[in-house]
Length: 574
Image (cartoon, rainbow, N blue to C red):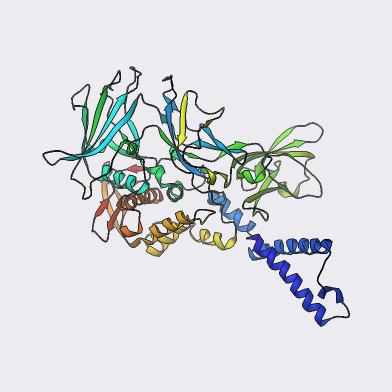
């Protein structure tokens, strides 16, 4: 964006100078002559750089004002969206000692232009001593249809399974169709021969969707931000993140041992219209989403009396390989004693008169595709500033747009915070990073949505406008942006109805949302269902206190109806 202002100002200086010299040859004869002096050209470019910066600031209408407002309620919107991917883990050769990988494990990619991109896992991963060796769709002689998944034991006779979590892998369109079928068309689940202890028969409620809870967040989420927005943001960034199902009710089941095999039969209510293409890659174990966010050092800065702003720079030989994601903390060092004093952010609600505060200043870099982070420091009430010598920063960073050059399988290098004895790789190419919209033109619509309530969400245009706020047209992500934009356009009807129901002996009020969608605006019926499931969770979290919501979605082309359980916050009402 700044290139536009710079080129515009440079052209303006040259054109207006020539015109002025032509009209006033007596006082400015040299302005009309072409320059052969590189020092003159350098001077003109410097002036154009300065005036271009001023022009951009004026056009943005001083975004620092609106930044401080948004930082209070939607701080996530002022952060970049980092690259994300899906990781699969497996015990390394010759070891079966690791039973799980904790959330927050860090893994590196192969070097890209000399820098390894670091990713952090977002959920705990269990590595059961079984593997999926076969999976396929079957129709029996009596017309029963289902999916058979065969597990093979890999050791660890002492393993006790309470549940198994599967990631529905493969291409997204087909995977989401299978996800939809399992969660809406399941009759029962038969493990083994169905007889304890080697088998068990489970109802359809034993298969539960996973990936929605706050503990399973893909993107680091500020505690002051509404969690429902996180679900929307994560779906538009990486919808595959929600393609997890957990088979529960296995506490009395005895897992196979000594290379034995066992079948899990997912019996369907009816055969699908189009036969499913299912193989072992559709039912993956030990998978977790990962995000390109990590702790990183930042260069300390020396304080100078004549300077008001200080740039926060990641410590790196090439700054284009690192982007500040968020400023976690700022500390000041006293001159002479070296005493360390932590500072509080300007927007903190716990500031007293003895504190020194800092304010973040976010700007679009004029020299590269990045966001610059700076701070200014002050004392409440205009008190005299203590004699500080330097500042240090605690930051979270990303690798910016560098992960876009990675392919599936490239994130496979261990770090000091990687689990030992475990092999891993990324299943898909990382998603594109996206810079936040820092200009006021993009941010004012957020202010209008701050009064979000059920009345606002009852109007179709408001509902779609709210969803559109989470579509960020980022570098290299136009195709993903267009697909998400088309999904929102596929919402063609919205009606709400006040309702009541009995819950735990008490009559509670709620809102029924009837939404009409078009399948041809989605990757398939499964994509429509997954998107609607995210909306169901969002609506539940946005409900007023002690009220519930229920979502009913109708696909207008086929008339197929999906109905979700009433929901009060995160809890589904039984």
